[in-house]
Amino acid sequence: MQVSDNSVSQVTINENQAGQRIDNFLVKHLKGVPKSHVYRLLRSGQVRINSGRKKPHYKLQAGDILRVPPVTISENEDDQVPDSVLLILKKSILFENDDIIAINKPSGIAVHKGSGLRFGVIEAFRQIYPEQTLELVHRLDRETSGCLLLAKNRQILAQLHEMFRHEKIVRIEKTYLALLHGHWQNGKQTVDVGISKTKRSGEHMMQIDKSGDRAISHFEPLEIFELPDNKHCSLMKISIETGRTHQIRVHAKHCGFPIIGDSKYGDKMANQYFRKLGLKRLFLHAKQLYLPLTDPITLDAPLSDDLDAVLQKLRP
Image 1 (cartoon, rainbow, N blue to C red):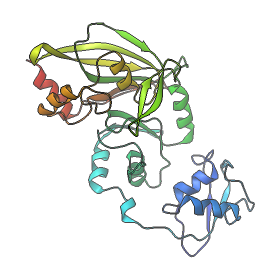
Image 2: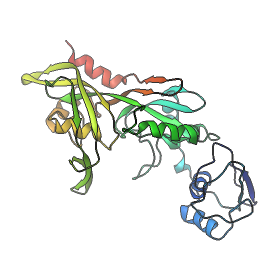
Image 3: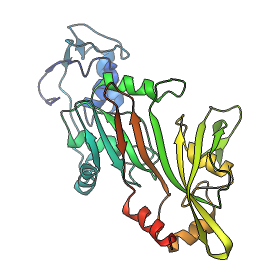
Image 4: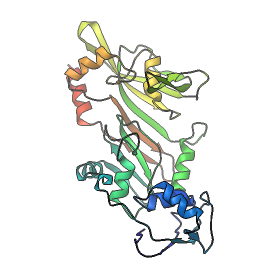
């Protein structure tokens, strides 16, 4: 949507835009305009829908005609995602159709802006596809790499959100690879224990809490590596039924096998050893997503070169 700074705009809502709250729609499309100003436009009646006033929580319907008054749009170059990041993310696309974009998210790039970050994956792809409605289907930690889904319309977004709910029989299957500190000897193991948020030394952390949000992770050893001084690390396949914040990281620590490279929950000595091997990040990768749609889709994200290089150094 283009909004002039000296004329009224008329916008007709299409099916992909339907279902959004009017305030959220305006915040996203009036790029550079503060939220406070958007709400003033709504309260004062300067924004009208089908010639009438609407509350900020009104949900748009296909065919609605939106009147947007003249506004000043900030053209701050700092809001732009660097070309180098756009190029990396374009190359990371694993799959695309009329409904979704799937990428192999690089480690170190957040999924959205906030907490001092000027941009994330979603802001970058909205810049790559300026005319396309795009929403995050789910999230990955900034340091976690691998399969990440973006929805191109609200219908598929709602459908996939429903499939991500762990209590559903038909649900999305999520599989990760992680390198854990220690010799895993328990074979296949399911961890079904709650997680809650806490604050330590001013930093937000997640912790095991039996009364917290239920979290279910399935651990399976793939390969055990011997390290100096009779120490070991374990390459694990981990599937999760729930998607709590830092779930795999907290469950791995709870089992006594923290993820290598984890600065929040990991083992400092192990992390130092692996930094010498060239690992500069969390060894956690969202390897595969299975989407049980009418035409099922299996997405597979190859390990990044840096993670693969570490494994090659560990093998005889």
